[in-house]
Image (cartoon, rainbow, N blue to C red; front, side, top):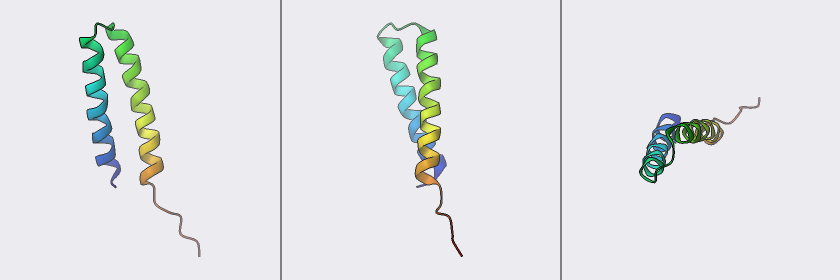
Length: 57
């Protein structure tokens, strides 16, 4: 799976979570903090899952 596809799916997930939190009345600062943390987790897991295998000679 491509890293960009993985990151796009994670961005949609973050958007949905942020929308739900704002609808629930959570302050915007907390929503922003949660979104940044989730973005970092998404990048880390995306790199881990989409990185190619090292070729040994």
